[in-house]
Length: 471
Image (cartoon, rainbow, N blue to C red):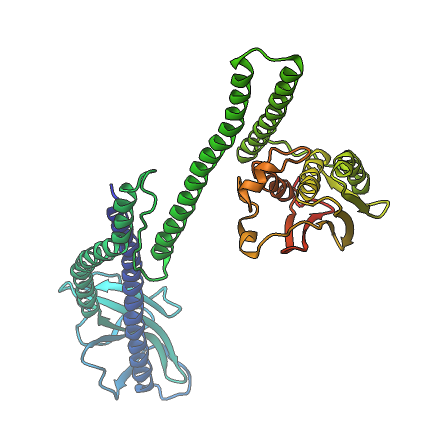
């Protein structure tokens, strides 16, 4: 069962329940209103009759008498022709009766009647009536029982007409509503069908297609826009994956080619021991570079699969930075670069020390790698409310403004030729160090900002929360 039919059936079923409830309420309300009007009319007739009813007592005294005890009775009022009426004494004997109640199918036992009452009854000709029985006492004249009635057959006719109209109207209303519901469901779901057909035509090799549906800004329109945005993200992800594989293959091919060339040259002819030692040193350097590249690729692969454990603990950030600066100091001395650390003695932070060690090692190593001999690299730490900012500044060539947006992309290098020729103390030189640093900062709920001026140097600012939002 498709969604159009389900929506139509649900819509029709709900409308049916609403119409039935409405019909029952109308039927009950109209019936009560008509019978209330009928009862009001009977009560008015009772008031008029009793107001115009007179006894003529033969005794001529002031004592009260039962109706019929030697007295005559007169009615100076003509009741409505639709009203059946009669006056009885307290023993049920007729005083005034126009014969309307003869052979009526109800007991006229008024001897037990001591209060006003309404009831339903039937006349001899099967006319249904609403009977109103009222005991009365007229002061100094007499007492008795007054019965008035009126047919409610017209109410039954109105009820029948209402039921007939509802029986005819409800099915046609449901039919029209079903057709309208199907039409509306079809119009509402047509864009989804178009989305489905378009998405079915899109494959992993054809992600540049978009829905491009001109729809209003409603639920379906936002769904189509979301699909387009999702396709754009998927296309970008696939492109990054392709570029990553191509760049990784290229970066690994270069050291492997160098490694194979060095070995082939060494095997080309017999050489002296110093020559073999020189060749082995070059092979060792190339192997180190290749090993560093593999380690970085493995780290990024684990990061993409969320398989890198996050193990935060409380420690002093100043101690960690002091250790990293000390580890890189021999490399700085070798390049004749002044490496300075300016930090408070105690900076408590809750983070993963292994990850932060890798982060700051990458950034400081990168600053040393691109600084010329005689330059300087400064590492400073400041606290801002609930964040800690670690700034790594160098006096290198700086980064052109147009390269800053892509600076943290994988395998991205500002000067690819220079990047291959310049090696760091711990990185592969493949353009993965900044990408890894950015990921490590984001794992802690932080981020990295870059300020750079050409020919004046660069500053990388690492912002980290003192307490990570999620652990």
